[in-house]
Image (tube, rainbow, N blue to C red):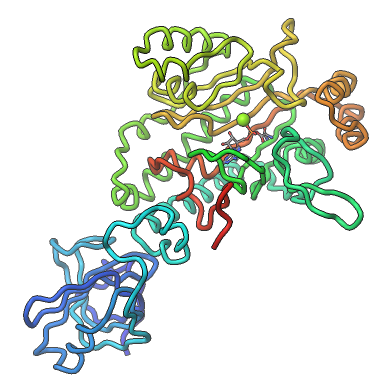
Length: 445
Ligand code: 4AD
Ligand code: MG
């Protein structure tokens, strides 16, 4: 009996006979030699069989194995500096093989496939190296998020997914029948966290959120994960300082723990390595001035038209892209016009048309990954804002009450998990950042 090991630990077993359980990713033959690449979920390694050693019957069986055949291989682990794999540099000299299933025509072959075909076959596509690497980075980001916040004394609270009212605008709600009433899938857990902080001081929720985004973009999913820290006695400056530490911790954790995956994704990590310390901070007013300057200089008429902007407009993705290209690190833009932001944001002292909001835009053209703000702490102002946004006040009674029993300045933010994965992995499109992404034209498989 040899021990069953996982490929990620193969380096500890050099010279020993082990058993690997996995799937055949690829194979080739050279005369009496068979070379396969076996993946087991934790990694991938080379398996080598020599006909005179394994015997004709086993050799013939290996030769017939198609891509993704499932097998149990026993053999000796050897070092081989030339052997590809994750980790690279090892191979297993096959002694025996048990085939669980022969596969003949696996739909995803090494040739190029169109993206729609791959998305239709997402249940298989997950097995490919690239997808495997991205989703392992995603898992590490999730753990880094929780480690950081738990380490800072935040309490993890679960906010409801079925909600009676809107928090982030009424145009992208998913409605459902809740017995005799209409309910909505949560766009955010924030409003509930504002109640939670009055009991726990600092909290976060981390789970799926839903928005019926009707446009097809590279940045929008209809179901995405958001982590939302909320903190009592916290202002906008405190919030930016926390976001800097938080985002730096996430990026540095991935660089340390997911080096092989980033290499596999051919991610140039030069820019990511700079994500530490403090990030540049510019006001919305400054951002508008900078954008106008950049638009002025733009020579391509189409790009020039795209970049047109006036004070009061929200940024589109062309604006965010070009803005972030001016900075090496993520950049904070604070003090947006209240009219383009949610109803609950604290007005800027002396400038009621501006609010104490801050977005964090990721570099290399990635754009907004965090939205946050200081929250309105005055109940009368809040009621006024609810009316202004044409929201039904009766749904927000409980939320207004939070400002009547020990109201305190408080702030919070939401970081989108998938946009963060796309940025850190260097992906052109958000669809690869979730195992089974949901988008305007995609809810299958
Ligand atoms: O800026 P947003 O809408 O902020 C909120 O929802 C606040 N309630 C958060 C808070 O203060 N607690 O969304 C926050 C982040 C965005 O910066 C983006 O990263 C992500 O959520 N996000 C999306 N990600 C993918 N697809 C979508 N459709 C997204 N909408 C927002
Ligand atoms: Mg936002």
